[in-house]
Image 1 (tube, rainbow, N blue to C red):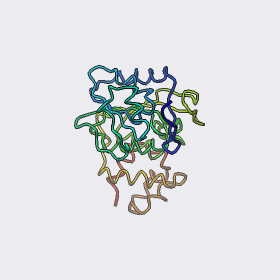
Image 2: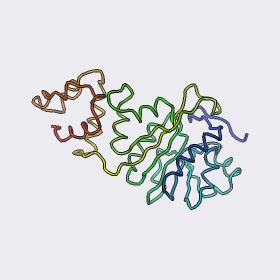
Image 3: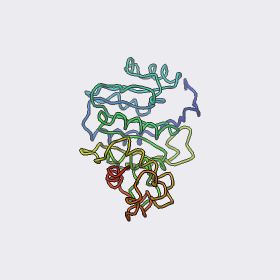
Image 4: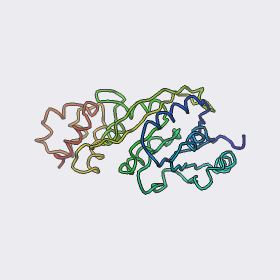
Amino acid sequence: MDYTLKKSLGQHFLKDDSICLKIVDALQKNDFNQLVEVGAGAGALTKHLIKLQNVDFKTVELDDEKVPYLLKQYPVLEGKIIHQDFLQIDAPFKEEFVVIGNFPYNISSQILFKVLDWKMQVPVVIGMFQKEVAVRVAAKPNNKDYGIISVLIQAFYDVEYLLDVPPESFNPPPKVMSGVIQLTRKKEFANFKSEKQFFNLVKTAFNQRRKMLRNPLKTLFSAEDLQDVLFTKRAENLSVQDFANLTFKLK
């Protein structure tokens, strides 16, 4: 092994090839010709992705030790590794591209918010997450797992939970289950007054998720609007469309 594992980078390397093949199989059900992998690590997924025909492939890897290791193992990666922090980079392609990866768990939510910035360029995301994060992203209303990330992602993407991945599929094994989800961009986004107002409304509503909405949202709406029965509900009871509709009533 020509590298060390770095806890600071949230590294858990996938070693179960059957899981890698399931992820690649899910990926190949989509139509694409540009692909970006987040966190190549030791190349468990990468070695399958570089074999895809007619695909312009790039992989993003921050770890200084991994880059020479990957180039030595897979010389075809020459010129295809972006040796930077994924959260800091500009879009790697000018046209549409698919995002895939065994995401570092400590930044997995931030990776999704980065993808939201690029949503007009990213039709599909397939990612490995800590299971509880994957479940939250996929959660539907009236569920304790449904929260800010569920609403903000589902305003733009349909989310499908693909598979569970047990700790022993990784080196070192994480202390938690993992899960793979697929995001597929919606043909039509929720209609809201502005994206900024929508994001702010959702975050404010879930700030006090145990309380009726008229509590956290009292500064954003008129006293008259707050009498609406909708404001007696909690944030987790509202659909994406409910939140989108509310943006038109903001003060």
